[in-house]
Amino acid sequence: MSLIVEQSLPYTSAELQLHDPRRWSRLFPLIRPSIKTVELASGHVVAVDTSLTKSKDVLLVTVGSAGNFSSKILSQSHLALFTTENAGAHSISLKEVVKFLRKSEFPVENGVVVVRSSLILGLRAVSERAIDVSVVGELNLDHVLSLLSASNAETK
Image (cartoon, rainbow, N blue to C red; front, side, top):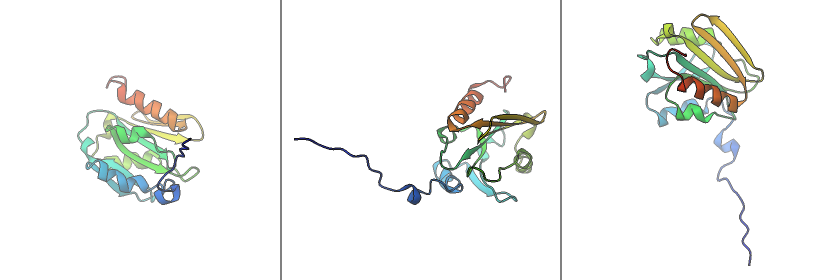
């Protein structure tokens, strides 16, 4: 006698809307109540952690890809803002993020680091307190977020 086991998923990726960039902005506030979703003037929908408005640390922002959502975004509570976008879509700018955070009374003078999943590797300092880091793939995004969250205030 033999038993054949086949992996099955109860829902298709289309039903789960895995490639919808707004999916997590609808779901994440249900997981963490301090998260609020906001649509920026550019049309980007971002999830903002309101519990970090009094933070004395460098603000971390991440931009992930919609189909390959980073597990660090779910497990880490140190992200001030995150969003997802489809590959090749118009990317949210660091200046737009800093402007929004400042308007929302986040301590941007402590510094802002935007880490994004991209097709190219890059590091760009927009000002002495704002850095835009692009990494290739979600695994590298997870690594950078892990390093930043584990570092102390002086290192950041």
